[in-house]
Picture (cartoon, helix red, strand yellow):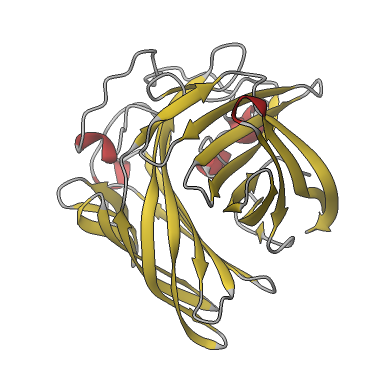
Length: 347
């Protein structure tokens, strides 16, 4: 759901803040801009950074297939976190950049992390031409809808071409995505229609792959309430061409706040409020010393969705500065397809 784990940049907040919502995302946004209803987006400028807001990300996941039918998952994420609501140049720049890259197979999960300071050329995002980068990792192209994606780690490398086959979609109320009953929110849009082809370089050799990718863009300053402990976020692409984004935010009292977006093949969306989307764990396993759900029942009754969502690799643990689970999933039931699942706050 794009309010997602990536906000790890906020682990730089004082330790006392970490009790206020997952990763400190429930702390007061004093001095920072706060999302407001009825947003008016400005493209291509909004593909770039919003330094007046405390946290932001460019978040891509891809479901890929090799020539022998083997399935793979790829993640590429760049996060920006502001330590203060002001701008300076050079080493005084308050922007901190983080990035995660991963490749998942049914047997392996390869992960890498990069960290950088703003203001000194280590990382950033430009709009025309579009480029999001940290060190030598890049998501860049002449336009936002035609890009090349690269990253590498100790045991993997990938070089992928992205070509958008549909429009941008906006979550919540025209891109204003509410995250709690108390009104916390973010600006949130996606490009869920990327076609992908390229090469994965893995320990067993190079693998040509094709498939589909989903890119999330989100920014906010206080996207969670202080009593929200983590989230479960689903991006599901069905064989019929429809798509579903849904998330549930877990609260300290055991209740959940949910939201969902139904996406037609032509990009027309229907937003669903709290309670319409349901995600129920069916099976759990031990992952990195934690008990984590790796098979779910996902329901959206108003669209006839009642599916089982299962992890391709249950051990898809992101062992990074602020660890979380993220990996590709298979979908069976009323609808069939593939997607991605992110789970944070499991201890």
